[in-house]
Amino acid sequence: MDSPPARLLGHLPAVFRAADTSGDLRRLLAAFEAVLFGEGDPERPGIEEQVDAIPRYFAPLPGPGPDEPACPDRFLPWLAHWLAFAPHALFSPPELRRIVAGIVPLYGWRGTRVYLERLLALCFEDIDAVAIDESPGAGLRLGQARIGMDSLLGTDAPFRFRVVLGLRGDAPAGAAFEARVRAIIDFARPAHTAYELAWRSPRRAWRGDDDAQWQG
Image (cartoon, rainbow, N blue to C red):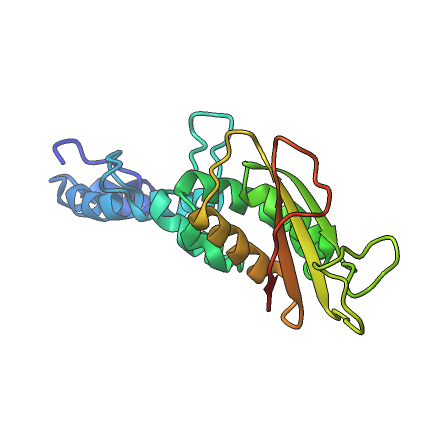
């Protein structure tokens, strides 16, 4: 504080400024200015600098300019929770930034097929196709039933839907990836529904004979 700023001193009446011949008042106000306005040290920001930085905590992606940084990684879980994205712990910071940045426009579609399709595409870049059948075939249906597989009499499947996902050729396939996908489906589906998840190999078109399992 060898050269204390005079930001606060300049707002005092002239009689006080003129009376500060010793510089004691200037040095006293300099301590308050360091707390309120900072000293240019990013490790010790002043209150004004902290308030100015609040908008960036709500920006998951950095802006185009060098002075438009994104929120820190440690704040991402809170931001995701604030946006009601419960499965945020399943994603890395770069993935979570992309999801948080794109999830708000989807909320108007919550509880619908469109919402689930777009959310899966947003959460997983390895998924290149999403098909949802809200009325999957069940029971003995001429031209559709497969002998020994779903050729049952009197079978109905209310409040169920079928999700078929296509993966990119180099996409990771395994139990961990499937668990993350199911967590997103469970998060997005209406509570009273159950679903069937099937995978389409990137090497062939889906013919409806993928392995699947009901999930309640």
